[in-house]
Length: 205
Image 1 (cartoon, rainbow, N blue to C red):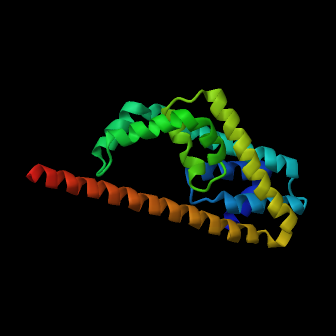
Image 2: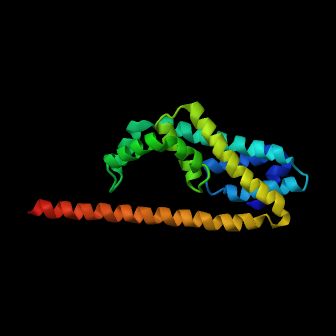
């Protein structure tokens, strides 16, 4: 993958890094933790302008996030509830509670979510479903993405040949987030199965 990214940036320059980040929003297996430090390292060698890299990667983040926002907007609340009704162990009330929570904390969630692995992409979908004002969503996404991108691009820029260290340490953070998500899912499933058992016992009495 590194060779592909290098080739893309050699061909397109900073816009190539921006394109890679836009695709990363749509295809999470393309990690920004690799793209951004590599772009910073490339800029440190004088092959790209650092400011151009920051502008293009942030623009790429916004474009990718807007694409997912519109996926959520086209999907809509009714379809979300219909999909939830078909999922095992998921209730419509779960979606409604999530919806209420997002309405209260949506702005903070969009802003800080841009700096959390995995959630960076996913947070755009509920924002679209709830039709968060497009200007607000774009502004918060731009601000959060600019912070995230700047940290990783500058890390690669100053580390130079050791830019891959950023990926190694960021990978640990990503694994922690994934582990917490997995734990939350297990807890949710356990609670819901326990509720089902209680319901069956009550029905037999």
